[in-house]
Length: 414
Image 1 (tube, rainbow, N blue to C red):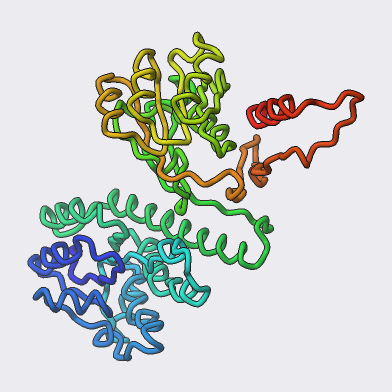
Image 2: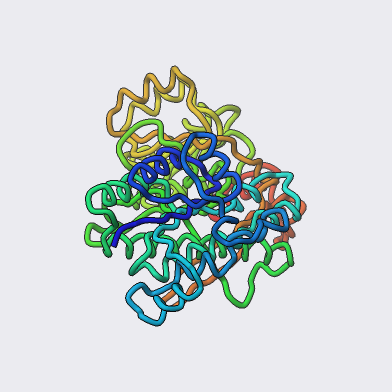
C-alpha cells in the first residue's frame, strides 16, 4: 500500500504547512477544509477542497462539511474486502489513506475567565472526532495523526517506504482514542458542573502527562506525574522548575503536602516538610522571620526536607536556606539575588509557583483518592476557622493569645 490521499484539517496549525508541503512533494493529494485549506493555498501547497470530494457545500457556518459518505466511506472501507471494494467502485468513491486532524480548542476556550456558555458550546468539535475515530478504527489501512509531534516520524516512514508500518498505525490509533476520550471527558465535566451535577452517575476524569518519573515511592514501582488540563496557577502541577535535577515521586508528594499547609495562611508563612509531615511551620512579619521560626521548630528534621513559602524569597532568606541541605524550595518567586545564592547549590530544586490565592478566596477542588477497585471523590477542605466559629465548653476560657495559637495549630493539623 502507499499513501495517495490525505485529509488535513487542524485548529493548531503548528508545523502543518511544512508537513503538507512534504506530503505533496511525495505525490500525496491533500484534501482540506476551511481555514486549513486557505492557509495551505496561501503557502502554495496544492489543495483539493472538501466540497470537491463530497459534491456538497460546507453549510451551517462550517458545522457540516466532512460528515459525508464520501469521506467516511473512504476512511472506513476495508481495503482487502471484495464487497467493500465493489461498493466503493459502484459509487465512484475513493479511499482516504491518511487523516491529520486536531480539534477545536475547547479546553483553551473554557479556560478564559469571561467565556460565555455559547462560545464554549460552539467550540465542541463534531466532525473532527468523527474523522479521527473512523480512521483510528480502520488503522489496519489508514494512518491517523492527531499530534504535531508525530509529523516528523510519520513523514520519515512515508519517505522510506510510501506508507507507515502497522505498528506505527496501531500506536497512532491508540493515541487518537486517548485524545478523543479526554476531549469528551472535559466537555462532560464542564456541562455537568454547569448543570449542578458535579458528582454524576459516571465520573470521568482526564489528566495530561507532565513527565515520566524514574520510579514511584519505592525503586521497584513504576510512576508518572500528571496534571489536570485546566490546573490553576499556584500548584505543584503548574510550578516552573528554575534549577536542580528532576523531581521524584516523593519530592512531588512532599511538595504538595507543604503547599497544602502554606496556602492556609494569608500572612507570610513558611512550611518545612519531611516525608509528608510538617516538621516546622512559622508565620511572621515577613518571609525571613517566618522561615527562622519554621527552622527553629525542628532544626534537625528540616535537613533534607522541603521548604514552601507563600511570599517571594529574597536574599536574606536565601542566605539562611543555603546553610543547610534541602531537597526543594518552592515559592511564588525568587529575587535575582536569591537565585544567585541558591543556584550555587547543584542539587537543590527551585520551584516558582506564581501567584497564590488568598486563603479566603480559594475554591474547593474535587479530590480523587484511589481504593482497591474504585475511588472516593470529595471536595477539598478550604474552610478557614475564625474565633467566631469556636464554642468554648470549658470553665476557663482561652486567652486571646491562646486562641491565636490554637487557630495556628488547627491549620497545621488540618
